[in-house]
Each structure stands twice: as C-alpha cells, then as structure tokens.
Image (cartoon, rainbow, N blue to C red; front, top):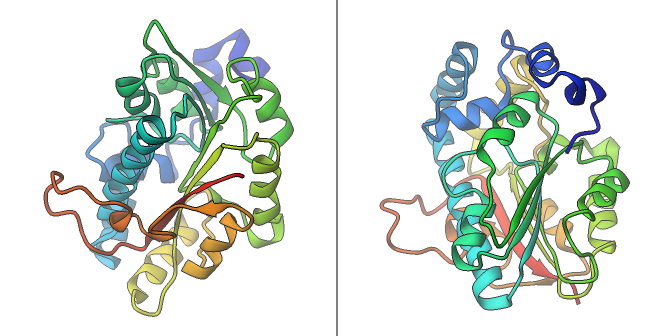
Length: 276
C-alpha cells in the first residue's frame, strides 16, 4: 500500500532514487545497533561515533525492542487486542509487532506505517502474515493522520479496539509541529478499549552524554531529533488510563528475567495506556 505514484509504477527505480546513501539515517543506525545488516558504511561510522559519545546508546535499541515485545504480548494475551497500527515501523528485525502478536493470536491484523524508502523496500519482502491474520504496509508520514487512518481502515476495523504503536517516532516531531495534538488526533479517532504504546528518548541531568549524542546526530544525520524530559513524555498519555508501572525506562516496563543483562535504566522511556 503506498501513496507514492512512482513507487506504484516502478518500485525498484523509485526506491533507489529516494534512498540517500551519503548521509546517515536513524532507521539504518538503529538497525546497525540491533546487529542487522540493512545499513551502509556512513550509518556504521555515525553509529560508532555516537556510541563513543554515549557508550550505552546501543542498549536503547535493544531495550525498546524488548519493550515492544512485552507490550504487544500483554495487549494480546491479557487485554485481547487483535489489531495494531504501528507508525514509525523502522527496518524489520527480529520480533516485529506482527510476529509477536500473531505468535499468540494468529488472527491478529497489523498495519505498519513508515515513509523511509529503505524501510519500504524491506517491508515488502519481510512483513509477512499468518494465513489467519493480515499484515499491510503504508508508505506515509506520521503527520498525515487522516491519510493514515483512511488507508488503515482497509485492514483494521476501527469499531473495535486498536493498539496504536508509536515507538521512537514522536521524537522526530518538533515542538513547533504540535506533537501532543498530533498524538491526540490519532487516539481521538480510536474506539474505547484501544491502547497507546509510546516510547521516546529523554533528556535528563543524570545522562548528560545523551544530549551530546543527540547534538552530534542533529549536526550530521537525518531526520532531526527533539528530546523531551520524562515529564514531557508522560504528557502524551494525558486523558488516558496509564497501565502500571507508568512511564518509565523501557527496560523497567514489566521486565522479564530471561533476556540476559538488560540495563536497569536507559534514556528511552515508554508507557502503555488505555482509552476509556
């Protein structure tokens, strides 16, 4: 599914034209930190430089991925959610949203949304589905709420609860773009019983090297990042019923004990909340 006419007419040509291999990109660096191969030398070089500024940065990617898995499993097994709208998909890796959801409920339906051409190229090949469920991909920007919901409605039933996944994506929405209003527009369109799962890199006096890493990124990479405090991140859940333990370091959201030495605290905070 795509709103890009060129991609529809000639997918390979249009995607190659849209992929900038000369500038580091956050999705590819994230993939590199997770041990993936869908990245370029420019991404690995930037990723290594960022890691020198903040040695623990690679743990964010792992903590965020584990948080996704725990949140999706809870929503499927404990809440009964069978529909997921995952915006800001990133490059496919192990335990994507549909893999976790359909592992426990094969009939689950998932719509992924991203506007990165490299993500789109891999999504077409890797985002498969169980026969009972369905997985679709939408080439769209988070800011285009109406377009996202219109196309997602071809796969998801918006009269039934939906889990809205916004992991590490609102950080790309600047304060001048009304990020809180954007998230509210999305949740307002979802029925009661829906849930918001959101994670966001934070700035904190206790983690000054994080600010240095973000500063380096904004000088060299794309897209630019906007850091927010833990209190600012919690505001995205205003009007919703936060599940325990609230908005915390992703590594502290209902941690399991079978994932090795997961760090106690990372500068990636997340939470899950229910719409009444």
